[in-house]
Amino acid sequence: MEELSKNFIEAFVEEDIAPGGQFEGKTVRTRLPPEPNGYPHIGHAMAFSISMNIAEQFGGLCNLRFDDTNPDTEEDEFVEAICEDVKWLGLDWGDRLFFGSDYFERTYELAVGLIKKGLAYICEMSPEEFKQNRGGIGVPATSPHRDRPIEESLDLFERMKNKEFPEGAMTLRAKIDLESGNFNMRDPVIYRIKHAHHHRQGDKWCIYPMYDFAHPIQDALEDITHSFCSLEYKEHRPLYNWVLENTDVPSNPRQIEFGRRSLDHTVMSKRKLRKLVEDGHVSGWDDPRLPTIRGLRRRGYTPQSINDFCKRISVGLTSNTIEYSLLEHCLREDLNSHAQRAMVVLRPVRLIITNYPEGKSETLKVENNPNDEAAGERDVAFSREVWVESDDFMIDPPKKYNRLFVGNEVRLKGAYIVKCTGYETDANGNVTVVTAEYDPETRGGTTPDGRKVRGTIHWADAQTAVDCEVRLYDRLFTDPEPDASGKDFLELINPDSLEILSRCKAEKLLENAEAPQDFQFLRLGYFSVDNKDSKPGNLVFNRATSLKDGFKPAG
Image 1 (cartoon, helix red, strand yellow):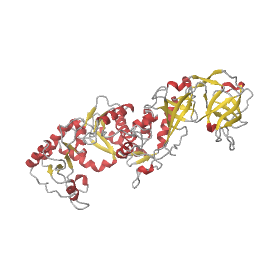
Image 2 (image 1 turned 45 degrees about the horizontal axis):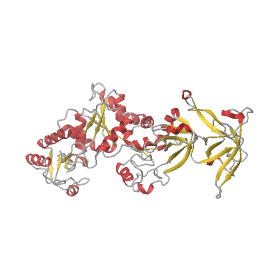
Image 3 (image 1 turned 90 degrees about the vertical axis):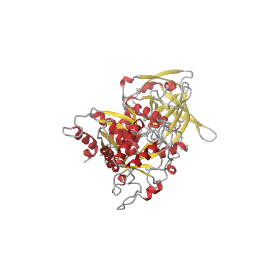
Image 4 (image 1 turned 60 degrees about the vertical axis):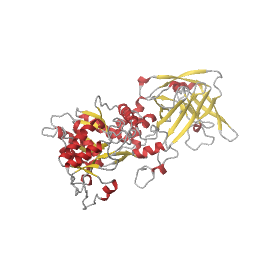
């Protein structure tokens, strides 16, 4: 059963292109149909991957077509963002970039054709009257204009196009079945008046087709074989098929629905994302706490990790919420294999090695990636004073604490074993300096006498370290389901979703780091150079994810 649920789309496509199937001998064609009214997010990436993977799997083609039939909310800014993000994900549409608005003339002609066939009419009910006359379960809808003469509807439709009527004055409705148990078939509106400037068509049009009418026509004109959409469109499929059957279009695509996939601890609704951005709860559409593609990209996610995440999620017939930890797991798997290692101290305290010669400095060799021998080693400077993490020292440590405290030994990664001898505090009791002595015979990991040291800590040479800002990100919401009905998602925003640390100390290797470089900061996690605020002399790193993997595979 699980296998069927995972592969039901592939099974449908195989059936359709097999001998005797409805698309036998045809090239499989799919499409990505984003609406340019916001920035794409991980949910779009999951949907995009289905269309792209099916096209690739069956040797077909995938179009990128913008659903730009609503001029009120669509902008060129979003078109450019979607193109850039889709390309960054590695989804290649080649020369198959289309806009739904480019089909407006043909769509209008097909609507006229429906009127001439007696299958569409002009309705003058207001939106309020439309709702009042929609009927209910077992109660048919009504329309006083359903029997309007064809010539009269043709004339009014032409005058609607010619901007003679205000918004809301009338609509064009398909003439289907006012008694249908599927309310989408109760003479749905297929054209409405909108006096709005279109991002692509300008002021040429003041009537715009509804999505349910335009979508199947656009699919057919592009010779799409399989049109994938989320589960809520299942009830719209009869209308999709009705439009194809009753308009003079050149092909007959098949619509297949799948369950939506969302992430826990976040929201996917464009309306809610826009609210977060416009009300200043986040810094913008590219805020690393958002599930937008450019937010994830800025945080440090790679296209490989996102595509891997999308492929791991089974395509199902029901909607499902995926654990954010799976997305993080995919990123760790990708970065662990190739990310450059580096040492950065987030909350620094000075460690003075009192028996190390003053004025001396040496260069140590540290591996760049223990999982990749070909990555080689790097030179790291070492001297009498280094920076260590403040929580790597405790005055009164608990049992099993294996880091710095008076009398205890630790190894400085790639350098020497040091034994803590003392510390200094300020007037408030805060530790400002830790002192230690080193064993010169333990350079670079050697231990001639064979003694065991349980703790190894990272550090940064005080003479050569560079300052940087580090931003630590956590879940944007405290509730795993902030989108759930009855919840105010704004009240569930996590006040600790961002912590900014300034004057962190990084080894000199990072001095010229640039986006989109990713690093594993030893013992701390995976970090990426911020692609917006970081610049020479003002390094900024974002924590993409911690080292700890919270994902637990099923079984």
